[in-house]
Length: 360
Ligand SMILES: [Zn+2]
Image (cartoon, rainbow, N blue to C red):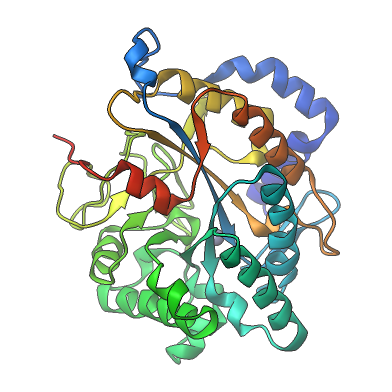
């Protein structure tokens, strides 16, 4: 195992162990949200709702007993990440009566036989219950897209493809959704997230061209995998409110040259490291929620707090529950207790916010 992966695994073990969680509870005082001006002294700043937008990157994989993650790239045919993962998550969403957004990697449509049937059944349930389906791209582990375009792809990140290729990849994903989930779901497809948050400028241009209205690839302040095929870089962005995505320089927030609204994933600082709002960080997610809830300006429009998780992190290989799932459940219970909090899909957030995103 590479050293980076070892450290990652140790983090997962730490975040899910009893001792680790108690230490975190103690240390959660270290959670800070930079670049969010504190408006908590102004009563008007809480006038509009605080929207919690739970998003699920829906892909192959599962969690092993020792907390190691098997990701789609390692085992693209671990379809349990789709059907068991979605099923486990839906149990929680049903229990709380909330709507969420599933960013679907179309790799699931390369499943066959029983696997395919089980995936379809779970996705139909998701659609029937009014959750949103968005598109999620992992070109290197998406055999459906590769088959459609008769081409093998070696990278996840948008940085490794030219504009024409990106256009073809996005369109292939859209077509696969139409073929497998039907015209209505295809027509409703307006939200997007590039795999590993790895969007770039030409990728934004291609998204604009293909008619998407919402992107949620941004993790403000965070970059990673800068030397490999999962390269992503949002380190220059320091805004947590939505903005119009730029198609000429994707990290610039005031270009106003596209029809796409960027609704970023919530990010925060924890003793110097940058973290995204994700239930794998257990108690820190609740703390980050409190910071945003207290500080974000909602005087003129609602504030969308975007949380992300993976369907593959919601199941073991056999379909059993995992700690991240229990933490997500606990987070929802926790957030529900706050005044004026609503759980919505990204589309709904987009519609509710929809008037003016121009940043001057
Ligand atoms: Zn992904």
